[in-house]
Amino acid sequence: MHSANCVIAKYNEDEDTIEFKGVLLSIDGKQKLEIAKNVAIFEWKKLGFNSAQEILNNGGTALMAEIKKQLKK
Image (spheres, helix red, strand yellow):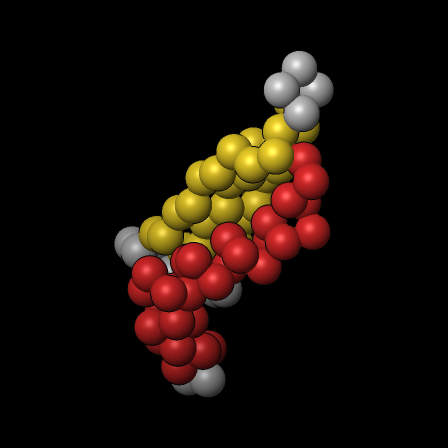
């Protein structure tokens, strides 16, 4: 079994924005870290990196360490 990571991005043409949602799940699915943002289209280059950093800084680093530990078993 592996962790699940999912990203969804949708362009809003009327507002010229990107609706972005991402999630990091533990192997057993009991832990879930989510992020949701609406950003201006000109921010698209930094969106993925900044979102990943936000998840990592809010518990994702510990969750990724646990996932790696479990995968080594």
